Image 1 (cartoon, one colour):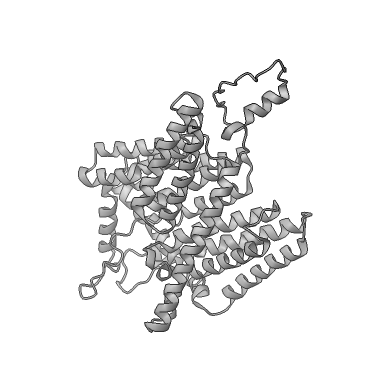
Image 2: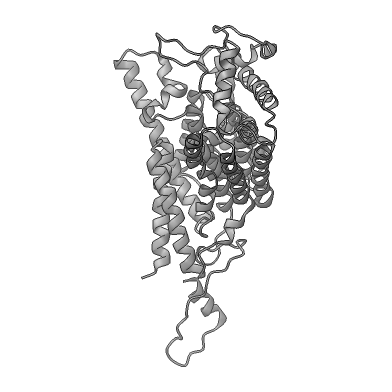
Length: 461
């Protein structure tokens, strides 16, 4: 029995289960499956190379994630709430464990990742279709408003976060666009283009301003790219991309629930963040709230002289005190809401500074720099676009504060990085620097001499 191929099949299954857990927000399933990827990868690497550790584990991104986590662990030395800090660090262990799992073997390569992305795209399309069906049922038979088709309400059946799902869809969209250029289609050309149209509609319904902006820019980029490229049926492809761009522009330029989210940002007064006190009725749009968080973080670390150490897990307590002292909306007893209480900084750079001081901020900047280094080394369009979106998202959300934020940020860069490398001998990678341990080659019977070509075929068998 070829145990290496058996482990390949197991890894193939674990990745598919991980995709299901991640897309459908099954936290236990996604956590267990990534652990199984790690264990199976270690066994495969031991079988293939004779060692437990793979050279991929020493890549800059994984090491930078490990450094960031170590700095977070050091905050236990001065935290006021050891129990809560320990629970928080249990969630954050995924910061370096997810990259470590992906790097535990040479399984990920161009061929395997292409197959896995087909399943990822199918799982995502199916999950969104279920959400649309349930939203239609609620609208038609439960007499709910049209809001069930938009933003968080659309993905509420899976208790998902609309922006996370938007990024998942964007990843699939970039994969589909990139493979048009390479002449690879999802089952058929018609299915491929229908999926692109379906996903862009889902991105519009999910209403993430960041992802919609990136999608419009991405389609515009590929439109000009295909204009300059000689590919089969270029006119049809360029016309289709142009039609999608026109659709996005029409949606954003007319009065509807999607365009209102953009108008809300453009109409806000940024000077409001300089006020020392607010009214509970004061509404902050996304830009105003994040600028206000920058002010609060600066005031907290300055007042507590915590520029070097941060405030550890007192961060949320101190932010809540700021919301209360400035008379921001903190909920209603009758409505059982908490208002802004419990809101983090919604910016991973600010969150790193607040929790772990300048060392934490510099460590996170190092993580982002390592992602950029992956792009410069591999020169993959898919990887470059996705990394750019993830870094931009860090200014919009504290990604390391939730399990799925961590998985989103740490999984896709390495998945597409190793997914851009070509297969070499028996799933090893040309640039991995770690050769497969040669197996014993039996001598053929008879006096016939075995030439180098025959040996090469035997090696590749």
